[in-house]
Image (cartoon, rainbow, N blue to C red):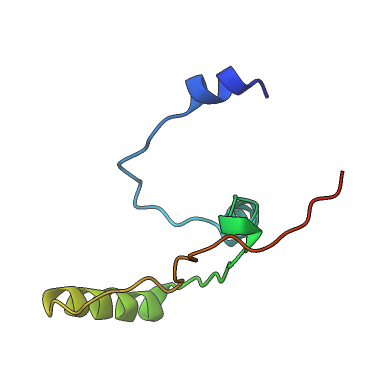
Length: 89
């Protein structure tokens, strides 16, 4: 794909349909997402998918945490230095 084509075909979606996503499509999208760049190629991927009762329990826990003004910290700390990597030519 030409680089300029990527920029012109990109778009943002801010409203979604209230329609379930198939398990197959979800797995394909998550596999593709693991190919995204990561800091120093650390690839810290841990993917969890929730639905039904588990998803509703997570929603309620996050809402309660927010309403209680609980502090939030990133699960992955931001590294302070680049790892020492040798590049062979």
